[in-house]
Length: 73
Image (cartoon, helix red, strand yellow):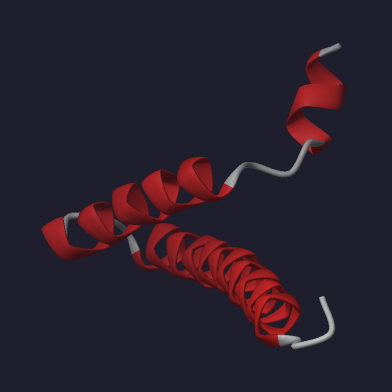
């Protein structure tokens, strides 16, 4: 069961919160170079995931506007 949860993709809100935590850790300093690199990589993954969520949301909004603007509907 724990493996299923670990493999589950986080929600936008979860990914954004984790990304904020990563940024805070990196900005605070006191982290080894290896840990900084791992945090940076995780931050890049989370940022890309958040961007995919936002792109999907924008696409849905655009599609709904096309339907609303369709004079035949």
